[in-house]
Length: 188
Length: 127
Image 1 (cartoon, each protein chain N blue to C red):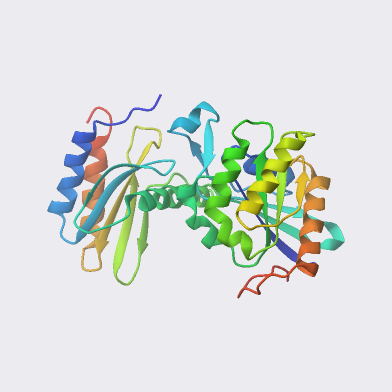
Image 2 (image 1 turned 120 degrees about the vertical axis):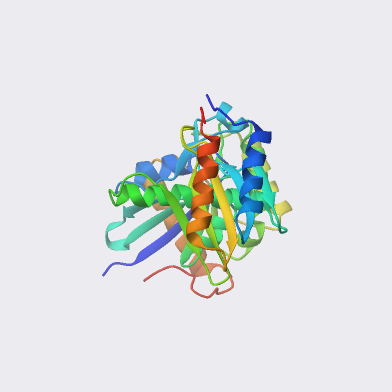
C-alpha cells in the first residue's frame, strides 16, 4: 500500500488555496465556500469557512491528501482540527497583488508558532516571475518572525509544481531539525 | 444583495430565547462567513470565536449532507456532557445568517430547538 502524505495549505484569503486544490485533486474536491459578507467581497465573491479537501495521486510516491484552510485569523481553530499527521505546510502568497505582503504578514502573525515546529515552504503564487524586491521582502518577513523556509515561485494549479513542493518538504523532513510532535510527521 | 435584519429586532428575538427558555446561556446570530451580527448572553463568552465556529460547522454540515445526497441542512446539534449547541439558519436570507444557541446540559433539547425555530421564523423576511 502506497504511503499517504498530508499537506496543509494556509495563506491569506485569495492566495489561491481553493483554486489549487480544485485544480490538483483527482477526486471531486470537498469545499466549504460561502458568499462573502464583508469588505473581502470587493476582491472575491466567496471564501472558505471550514476547509477544502482533495487528493492527488503521486504514483510510486504515494498519495497526497490536500487540506486548505480559511485565510482569516478568526478561523485559526481549524488548524487544530487538521494538523494531526501533517507532513508540512504550504504557505501561499498572492504575488500578483499589492496586498500579498500584508496577507503574508497576517498569516505569519497567526501561524508563526506552528510554523516554527513544522517544515513549510513559502510559495509565491499567481505571478510567473515576482520582482526580486517582493521575494526579498517575503524572506525578511520570515526572518523577522525567526522563521526559515525555502521560497518557491509556483503555479498552484500545476501538478509538477506541487510535486516539487512535496519533494522540498521531504528534504526538509529528512534534513531539518524539527521537534517530533505526537501523531504528526505524516506518512503511513 | 444581502438583506440584514434590523439589529434591534434581532436582539429582541435573541433576548426572548435567553430569558424564555430555561438553561439557555448564549444566543447569537452569525454571518455565514463567520462574523458575529448580534449576541445575547447570560454568561461570558467569545462572540467572535463562536461566530467563526458556527460558520465552519454549518458549512461542514451542508457539505456532508451534499456528499451523502441527504438534502438541505435543517439544523445542527452538537451535544456534550455539559452542554449542547443548536445551529439553525434564518430562512429566506440565502443562508446569510445562522442562529447559534448554547444551552446547559439540563436544558431540554426539544424546547431549545423549538425556541430556536421560533426565533429564526421571526427574523425571516416578511415575518
